[in-house]
Length: 190
Image 1 (tube, rainbow, N blue to C red):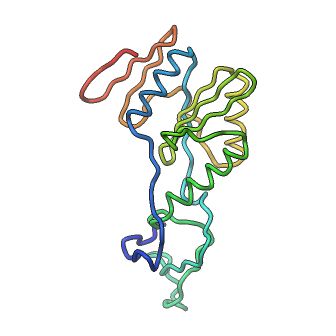
Image 2 (image 1 turned 45 degrees about the vertical axis):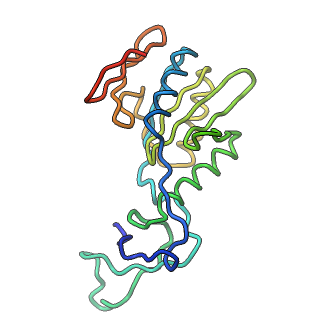
Image 3 (image 1 turned 30 degrees about the vertical axis):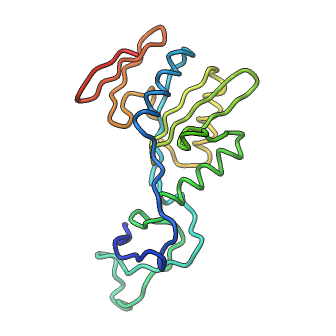
């Protein structure tokens, strides 16, 4: 079900909207850092991502086509969760995710807010957010598994295995901490 976000009016239906997404340069830096630190990158996907966001105000929507109550065709639904199509859905999701991660001892990157870092003793875990796709890797396998498990406990996630596609990049992880990155325009060995 999608809300008709195009009907929302700025200042009336929402105050702040944005979709915080990773830039291609940030992904390339993550790949380079993983090469330098010699660790594998993995990917997970959040199922029904915007349903994870919390609603802070009262929002009503019309009955969607195909789900109209014929006894009460003029009734509207009061939303309990953010829906895809609401302009503040991406913001709501990112706030929920980042609050959870900050509670798990992550720190946001200072330049790129889609990069989150967790330090544990001398170990490091890096994750990059692109709406519902999360790329991550750690210098310690136990730290990586702990992160993966905590994310799956909090959110409905699909583990995608090793990172192969992320933000228009096709990635092939090779031995000895090198990556082969390919877009439709070029191929690079990192």
